[in-house]
Image 1 (cartoon, rainbow, N blue to C red):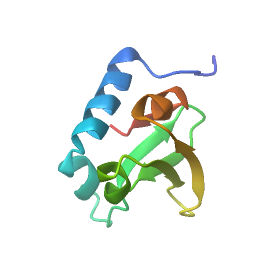
Image 2 (cartoon, one colour; image 1 turned 90 degrees about the vertical axis):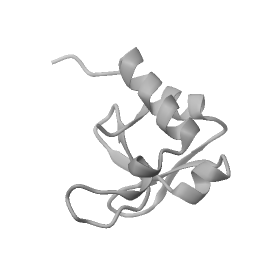
Image 3 (cartoon, helix red, strand yellow; image 1 turned 120 degrees about the vertical axis):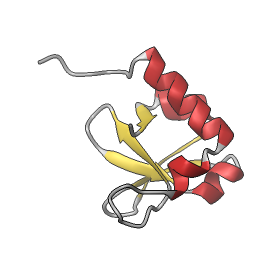
Image 4 (tube, rainbow, N blue to C red; image 1 turned 90 degrees about the horizontal axis):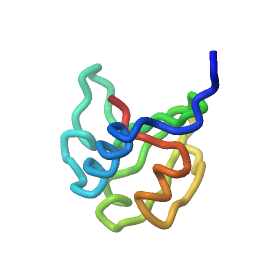
Length: 90
């Protein structure tokens, strides 16, 4: 199987839309009943992360590891998040 290096343009646009609007549903509500730490993200490498709602409201694009809460990367823009291999979880 070929290794993924980028998400589809549709996934990238959805990510841009959710992060630009700070979509409250994406940041706050979980279907599995677990409390959400922020907007869940997937990386092309298979890692999972999130951006907190406070960071998104302040346009600070810090991605944290879903399991450890470790800061993985800080980006200058939403486009940087996308180019860094992240997308909003679907």
